[in-house]
Length: 400
Image 1 (cartoon, rainbow, N blue to C red):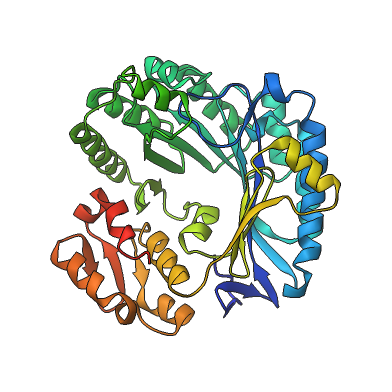
Image 2 (image 1 turned 45 degrees about the horizontal axis):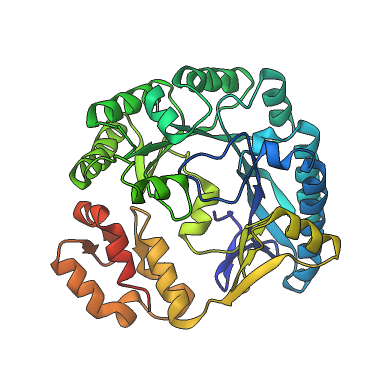
């Protein structure tokens, strides 16, 4: 995150007088909604024909936001992350307009990390090459599993072979920074099939891997099927064994386990996601996107039609806003910071809040250290291996 000439200004890094903010752009279109997904998205059958209107609106929203935050001075963008939905469904011309507007509204660093989420099967060679020429330099590929039965259970549109082909295509078109998203705890998944998914993922030699446990979210088909007794998931013990297997296999393959669910080759951590884990400023654009800047967290409307209407009126399409300060800001900084395996540095916390963590959370820290969940030394607080297994419980201790 830090530039050589960077200096702290409040909670944001600065460079040549500008505040750094990560940019997130939510593209709400997908081929088909997966059974577990609770992100805001529209199947193409429902959203077809609205892509151009969306691109017009998201470009206008960036212009509105740049004017609204002009009093903060120049906003430097070290990262741009296009998520969704499936951003790779956009045409190169549409993606190019979005990136061009971002560069016009914000000072996008020449070496900015520009990540595009993609599903296997939504890219061809010509499109991938065009995206690379537009400045996209990192692709996050939603593989989830290399087992076709598991992919069908999730409602994914690709096969394991198509995922492997997508990696080959991206390599052939010049992408040297790839991240694969994997999931465990899936319907019908066994520890053996998870080991096979890990093996096939490592064989593709991506620079980065994410390995998340399935969470059954409300208002998804999985939630309905679970209530009806039609969703067969691995036991909690198997889920824990899968988590530990992921750590063992990926670290043995040379990946740094740098965040609870993320692994990277040296120097290949996700720069954008580290903005979230350090609780630093970011701006989100598109329906349902979230921003955190100037101590305020704001969420856009979760409706493409309402989003388009608000932006057409020249308004910021914000549905909810909350000021994050005092005990809440401290607690959230501790919570997300402890997701990083390096933990929360005493110096970084003191620099931001004027006191060390022990001055605020002495009792919680002593209790968690005694329980073997937290490690404390002169420089930092970090999760132990046991703490990783109960990370959500540990982090909840720091929220007011």
